[in-house]
Amino acid sequence: MGMARPFSERVVGDDWRRDAESWIREQLERHGDAVTGPIDQPRVRPWSTQLTVPTGSGRLWFKANATALAFEPALQLELARLAPDSVDAPYAIDAGRGWMLTRDRGVTLRETREPTVEDWQRVVVEVARIQQAAAPHRERLLAAGLPDYSPATVLDRFDRVVEIFSQHPADHPAHVDADLRLRLLGARPAIADAVETLSHSALPATWQHGDVHPNNVFALDDGSMRVFDFGDGQWAHAVEALCVPYGWITSLASIPWEPVLEAYAGTWHLDPRDVDDMFTTVELTQAVNRAASWSAFLDEASAAEWQDWGEGPIRHLSRVLDS
Image 1 (cartoon, rainbow, N blue to C red):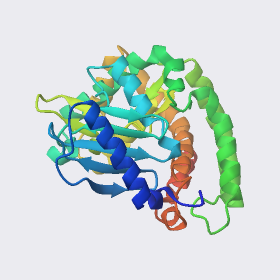
Image 2 (image 1 turned 60 degrees about the vertical axis):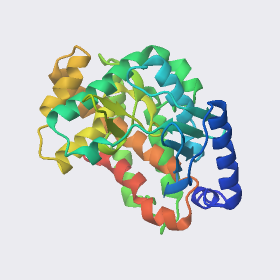
Image 3 (image 1 turned 30 degrees about the horizontal axis):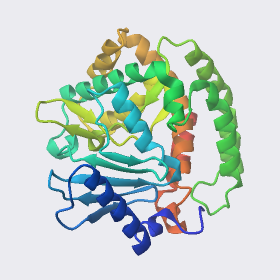
Image 4 (image 1 turned 45 degrees about the vertical axis):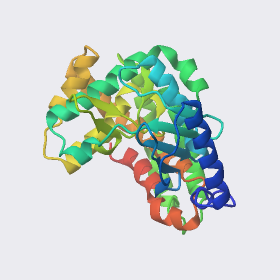
């Protein structure tokens, strides 16, 4: 169920808050700036928390991550170096603690409007551009802490996740019972086939965002899109980045998927039909990878938080049964 004191309890404590605010003020001082009003804590999750920081040069966001996502600040810094036109460099980071300050970029796409087909096309094109910049730099990004969830690692991850979930107590929200275990293991050959297919794919393993949706995209005044929130990131097959957009568009929106897929494929100079074939394949590997990451995100959750959020790992893992 996690560590002795859950992350969400630590980050509302006075000691933690003093440390965080002291660090924030130090970083502002280095930039010749200062806090100009109350620092608020609008969001606490089992895996991260945010503080809003009013300053003389505008609002900043402070983010602290639990251990499983502590790589995010260093990753964002590296991505900003590789793709400066697409990723904002952090204002300041403490990579060891998983802390980061970033500038407020305004409203998210979700806050601006109901995303159109054109909006989604711009989003996936931005993702593809970052992926293209990142693809030659595997070692650099893994050194920053990005988890290696590339196709060659998926089968071992599947075996490990099934074993761990099977050992959870029966009342645990991520428990895999004997019947589900048999059905999951029955899907293993299909996952192995997917891994083999992806090893010969026209698209590489690269950075993939992991959670691309309108709440994680800034809609800038010039009409461009800027993705943020990199803590779900993985080094995985490129097309896995489309799984969350596909789920969002097909279940929560009334727009067609095909033009979005075409925009992504066009950025890679590929036939959309070929990318669609890859998408069908990566649905298996992404299900395994997402289940593992969700479980890791809850490593420092309380028992109550596991009850609130703990169905996620099983829900994602069970998607391997849909193929």
